[in-house]
Length: 134
Image 1 (tube, one colour):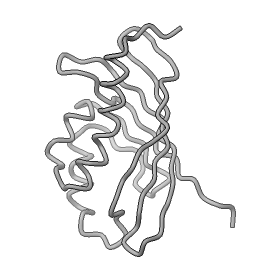
Image 2 (cartoon, one colour):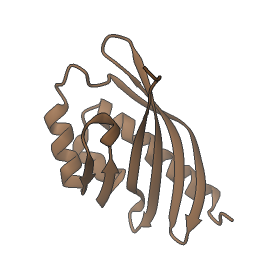
Image 3 (cartoon, helix red, strand yellow):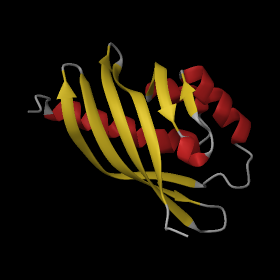
Image 4 (cartoon, one colour):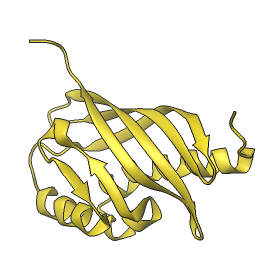
C-alpha cells in the first residue's frame, strides 16, 4: 500500500518531468535537482551502458550535446507511482523523443526515487527503448 501524500506525488511527478526541460534547455548543471548524486542510470538500450553517479551523467550529456541524433525534445507522460518502501518509491513513465528530422521514438522509464533533504530525487533510472521488431 502506498502511503505518500498528494504533495509527495506532485513533487515526484515534477521531478520526473523536469529532466526533459533541463536536457532540452541545456541546463545540465541543474541535473542535481532531478537525480541523486549517486544515481545509477541504465541506458544500455541506447548504447551508453550504465552510468554511475551524477558526474558520469554530466560527462555524457556534455559530450553528446552536439550529436546530430540528439532528440530536440524529451517528453514524459503517463507517470504512475507503483510502489513504496519507506522514503523510496518506484515509478514508471512513458518517454517520447522528437528527433531533428521530425521522427519520434518512445521509451519506458523505470525509476526509483528517494526522499532527500532537498526533496525527491531519482536514485535509479532504466530507460527501455521501445522499438518495432525488424
